[in-house]
Image (cartoon, rainbow, N blue to C red; front, side, top):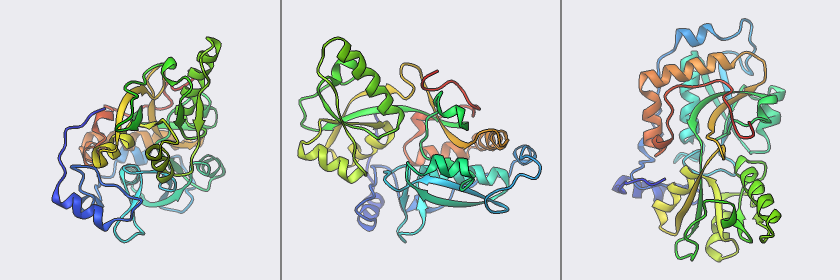
Length: 309
């Protein structure tokens, strides 16, 4: 995934004013992006909220968001170091707006959201979560973005291409535990080992800073994760480069979705809210300002085929 963008003076100022954990990509104005994008209340979406549905807080949509251990553009803190901004927070706001609800975002770790959603701690999770066959047994999904994954290496790496199973043989690749990208790597590794190729050496790190250090120090050969994040960082620093992309649902396509407790009935209302935001133009404004428009969808789907189907 490539973007042709230029860095602005405002973006440079934003870089300096944000914490070291936050990155600004060329052409992305983090100061301007603190201003919320809203969408009108959707009568159709409101009508689909189940009768007597009990939200975590009445009149409020409580959403677990990708901030802890995540990376821009999905989740980061504004200049006050308290307000959560990012593409996932923006999507959550559009969903809440369409449902006629206030929004409460809760920064959560990847390990926390599944139990948090099933236990009722959160009404939903918006965490760059890919629809998978296994996850559909426990959760309902309303899609809001395509899923693509990217391999990134140090800019002066001799690795020029990682696009298929043989390319990962024997390599040290950073990947998130329990993610769909890990599932892709493990499937490729199984295929390689059956052919007698060297085993993959997956590396699991706790946060983005640790991954960056591992790549730049030579302790890892590549990272494999959401392509939006990889492109965001590569364009900013020039220290990494893209060497291959894979559909998030390899070998099929897959989608990123708002994740809800299975069978509680809220997914229909959320889908209607997302489709209303797409129709209003607010949705594409959100994706555009975070550099994600290459992964836009025309309409939200409920529980579509995903990884493993």
